[in-house]
Image (cartoon, rainbow, N blue to C red; front, side, top):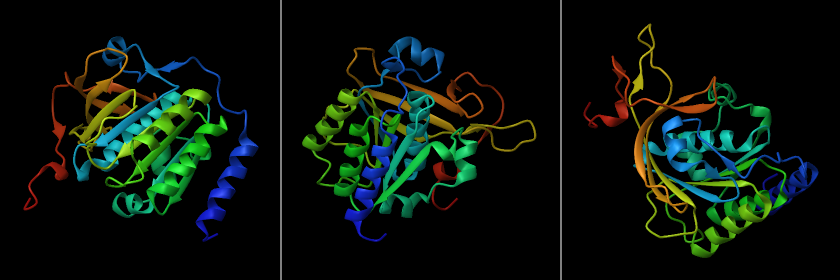
Length: 252
């Protein structure tokens, strides 16, 4: 199916068949990270949250953090992950075994790839307004003109009306204000080595830049525990850390 209009219509039909399956959990969800959760009191499930990559090399980490939020928000519901083609060209396509390693059931991930941001936003709004999903993750490339204040307001409104968490991933730091309830900047961090010296769980430097609920912004070093499907603290970890090649100079 090569016609984008036909692909979008197929998505709409699939969402219609899923209508009413979304979990009816409480209006807030947490990260599973005691320190952060105590300060924030949880995140609003009926809202737009923005996750931005600290640098171009951190986009995969930003996507990982966003998927972690989606896992926490969706409960047993289905997650829609909508990406631009350019994003997958840079960081690759999802891999079933990799999703499982992240704690995701591939059978509960609806993956949608679009050519440009205009189609991505259309698909995302349809997904949010369907009421059939537990969370919708949108990965946009660069700073497309289509992703303006009007577009983000429409996403925030759809999330609020249907109670579906909307998580917008930006490959660059956003230059504009917007209706997102929270905004996070993510960078890769050294992971804690396993006992055999192998790299450990995915580690992230997580900075909360904006929070409309009033709790103060902050920064933490976290790891994603896929077996527990939650974020945990790494700041007080002692011992060896596995360095990241991406954090070294190009010559290295």
